[in-house]
Image (cartoon, rainbow, N blue to C red; front, side, top):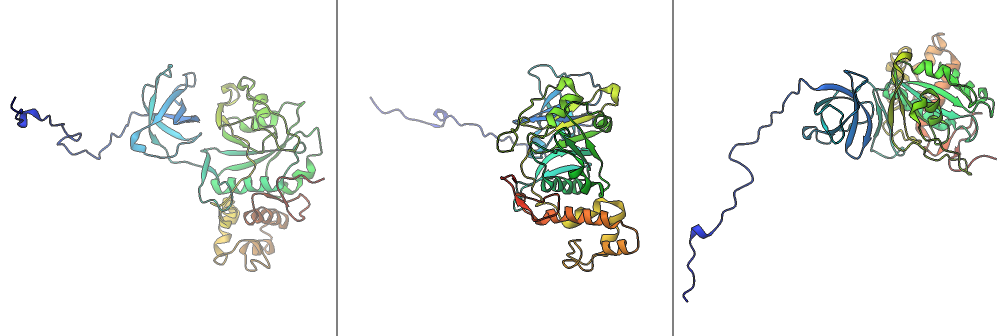
Length: 354
């Protein structure tokens, strides 16, 4: 047999994947996108609550391709298109992320350049700490205050387990900051806290075991958040493993409360000394007269700090400036160090005092 002769008809040419038309960079404006708020984030899927009707079921959404790797967190205001019915096995697309009014950020430590956006658009940051079991740590509270001021949130200190110890010992240094201080105990409903949260988006942050989820359960009995216990070494178990925004009753003014996972350190690599006094309207203008590089700690470190002039003129209470500077010292302290309430030498985290 003679060998077969091949010609071009025997060769199958695979068509190219790209067509002859160039890909356009124009994207639809999605002017009809429905506004919503992100309530949970789970493995590349976002649960969103549409604004139009609070009785509608939540919508599961994915991030639109044109957004790339745009970070989207709980509290973000977004625009949704696609199937917005909220039915099982349906999915919408997030096509727009609105500019954030506030942002709570932290880093793993003070040398970590990677910022973690915890919650967006929260008005209040409720710093929850127990007065005992586990022992309160001023270092952690101060760091949360710094993060709140830098992110545009109004901080609130909530002391739990007041039936176990006198809360005023821990609360006194913070009152000079004109910081709202609320006290709760397990045998009384947190009425004052519930009234403060009504009509606002608020985030709860604190160490594990201090009672964040217990407070949420007291304010929202239907939330059924897991409640943990404190371990034998004084560190609580992580009962909240992901941030979750929960709606407050409409008959009480509405609003949202965001329960965040318990953390054991709060890095502030993204914060500068100017961010803290700049959060106060009466101090923001004054620090513009400070010399470059001023840390606002006063003599001897910052002898020409403009905040001292405010005290001399009677425009700033000395006790308030002292409290503010104690918080600023936090920026120079490792996340593992905790300043004792009496102002003594800081102690390292991980071990409890006798």
